[in-house]
Image 1 (cartoon, helix red, strand yellow):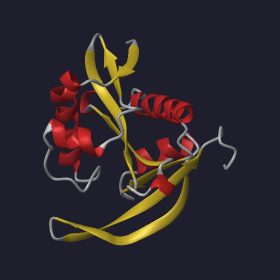
Image 2: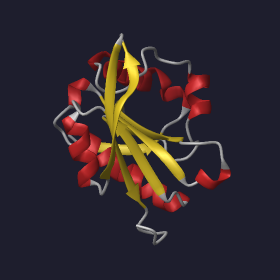
Image 3: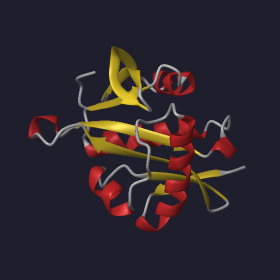
Amino acid sequence: MKVKFRPMISSDWNSVAAIYKQGIETGNATFEKEIPAWEAWDSAHLKTCRIVATIDRIIVGWAAMSPVSGRCVYGGVAEVSVYVSEHYKDHKIGTRLLEQLVSESEITGLWTLQASIFPENRASIIVHEKMGFRQVGYREKIGKMDGVWRDTILLERRSKVTGIE
């Protein structure tokens, strides 16, 4: 099983959205409850560092980044998203996607990557920590989902290129 990586393009959206929907349905991947239209998703994410993982030209995972703020001082800080098809869990695709995302972020000059992960999503926390993310906070009752307050763990990774790690 050969995994290939390439930039995400707009025509990938149906496959990307289907994988995103699987993540939403777990209840432990995102606070989102609905798949946005491509235009809304596109405008909320950085135009660079959008990656899909494919096996035999079938999209099996994706990764992208969102700006954490519109303020220019945070221009080099982005929040990561990594999703893998439920049919390809335990194949290290998430790890490899995050590796690609980190590599591309270094090239584009991002100095801090962050991830906000539900504590129940241990696999995602482990993958991020393997890629140099460290836990910097525990956000108690940061958001309500289905009437229940949820906590998140805040992780961040400093760029090794910018020298501020």
